[in-house]
Length: 239
View (cartoon, rainbow, N blue to C red):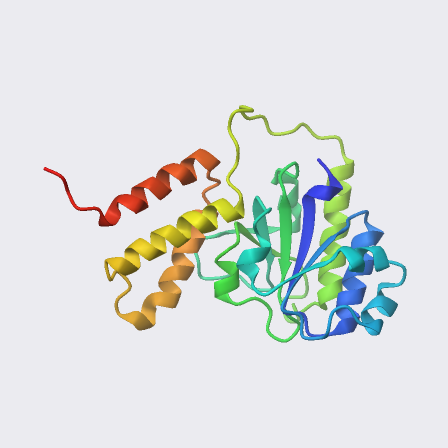
């Protein structure tokens, strides 16, 4: 287990103060990886640096992406934080379940914007959704407060000596990029066969496809096999 395996992703953060406070929280608990997806403020700026209070090194190493998919190329497990359960076939966990997650893998925690949280589209990339226990009548938490709770819990789990999950060294887990590449090929072949009909249902169909593949814990070899299967979908049958 390593602190370097953990990343924190802020999806479309709205306020400079929250970005700075999140960077501070990350450093408070010995983490260093912050990723931003389409931040509303100019990044970095003086307010972000000021509110990070000494975590300028985290700010300097922060990576900014145009979309969520591109940020996941080095992620094995994505955990989306949400104040509500989703009507999707995805594993919902609480903070107490984090001890069951293999923290030796590359884990990213995804946080939604202050204004709207995470949409079902963003959640469809996740392996799990995580709900922080709070007042049932007032579940909304400040962005930096949510992150600091998760950082505190995960830091404690990493510090405890735990046995690693054992698996053959020959088996290499598929990265999010491997799965995205496979899924892109699948979608392309389905489009060639005019699978997405009616067209207005395509977005939700894509969400469901992503949700299925991202929660399967596929190996790199399995994604190659599935890619070969999808590539053969439009080939003419040979007698």
